[in-house]
Length: 84
Image (tube, rainbow, N blue to C red):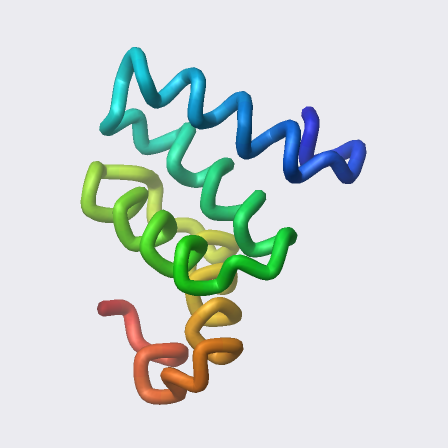
């Protein structure tokens, strides 16, 4: 909800609190990745999108799009179009 009302800093903080209880919660990692992307923290966003997928999160178009966008901003062009 915090991302929907354009409060990515608050969303990031909430995710950090929730991850203390369950560090591998894929859903929380996905929200955290999106918050980092909105904040322009592209390296962190790319890492969290990847962790989301590694932890069994649903491989949706939004997840791959977010990771691809992060990689584009980082000038990692081959990785931006791949699924790895």
